Every structure is written in C-alpha cells, then in structure tokens.
Image (cartoon, rainbow, N blue to C red; front, top):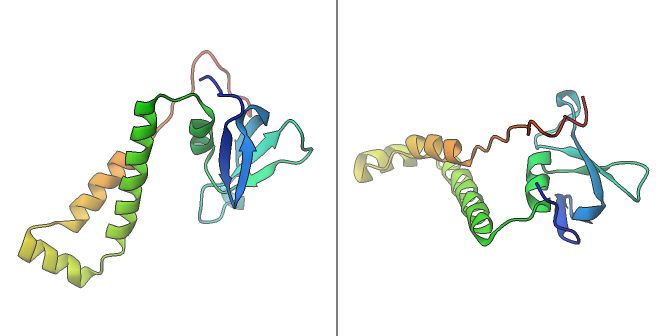
Amino acid sequence: MDIKPGRMVYLGYGKYWRSDAIVGLMPIGRENRGPGQRTDVYTATLDEPIVASRSEIAILRDMAVASDEQFRMQEAREVMGDMLDALDDVPDVLRRVLATEAQFDVVAWVRRLKALTKVEVEASEDQPELFE
C-alpha cells in the first residue's frame, strides 16, 4: 500500500491529519472501546496518540493512493451503509406491511447489505505486524 503524501485523512471527532505524518495505527482494546470502532493514531509530531473514532482499516483506506474506481466503490459502500442504517430503523409493523403488500423483505435486504458492506483486510505477508 502506498501512502499518498499530503492527503488529509478524517480521523473522526472532527479531527483531520496529514497522511504522511501518521506513523502508526493501533485499535483500542475491546475493554476500552465504546459503541464505535476507535483507534489510537500515532503521529510524527505529537508525543501522545490521537484517539480517532474510526477503525484503523478505514483510516488506512483513506491514507492510501486510490484510483477513481476505488473512490466510486468507497462511495457505493457508504451509500449501502446509509441504506442499511435506514432499513434497520424500519419498525416491525412496516416491515410486515412491506413484505405482504410489496413483497419487499426488509430483513433479507438488511442481511444482504451487511454482507456487502463487511470489508475484511488480510495482513500482507511481506509486512510484519507492527503492534504484536
């Protein structure tokens, strides 16, 4: 993965940092996690890490050089995530009405969107784990 220098990366909580100044990412342990995916972000200029509200994988994706197609795929993932959130909020009564009147199975679509938005990143064999 090549890091694009000078790219501003959104860390969450209203924080942005330059991609080439980020030197390490470490997910916060489960016992210290809240409802979201949080990450300690180590930078070249600060002694203490910045707490980011985003996962390390999301931050890495934003730091890397990406083609236009990858940006479109990311946008599609975000739209699917928004759709998933909206469908999760549909009340049970409306789900039953949609299923019987429009043959629209909200539960099936939620399950399908969750499968599509789940991104698994495998560790590269040529780069060792930094925080073991």
